[in-house]
Image 1 (cartoon, rainbow, N blue to C red):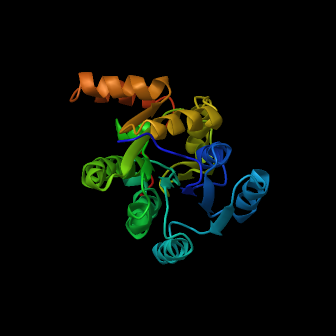
Image 2 (image 1 turned 90 degrees about the horizontal axis):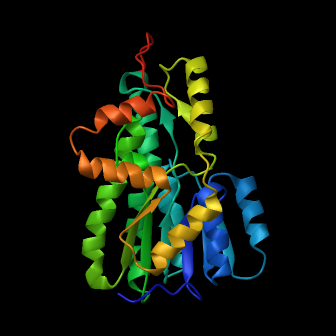
Length: 283
């Protein structure tokens, strides 16, 4: 498959109002890609759009991807406006802290709706536009928790493992259409996901806040650096892009110790996440 050509193509980026999505939008604009940006934060999305200036064409849509109906409507609007799309970058994601018995099924489902459901829905809706564009590419963002599954992250890990499996299957299916597919596994990126993360209803607020502060300290990789690595992977049509030493280490650990790495991961996660049972019933 030929190298990806950024200049002149239209790229759709979700979660574009901050963090990885914002950095990717700027990096794509510098390479000459026209942009369609999606996010639920109207004020931040407007600021990102304004900051991109007039170097390329930019349009934006405010949408809550937890809302299946709204996601479908915005997907159809984007398809109507852009019948040919060269890049779809499914980046939007949310986090939820707490053991499985500390979160409600509603909380669990809401996370899966954003992290996995919206990725599936937008990919399905916009696939005709990708197929119509020669040299198109699809990127889905998983996580290091799509490589290993620590305690206290049942919902998040489930959604990110789902993204991983979905993306790997699509890579084989879309190869005959000439569409490249990349799954990204970020580790330790300095974004707002920890700041915006929700705690399960059964999690002690003080315990969760302390865990969030500890976890935030390990998010040291600048989003701009991550964006460069991702775009390099897209250009080279990489199947997988691991961002950061933590992602590479956990990937190696999972491969070397496929059934026994859990204790090591659990011990490390205990320092940064909510993983102890609580007296409160969450589900």
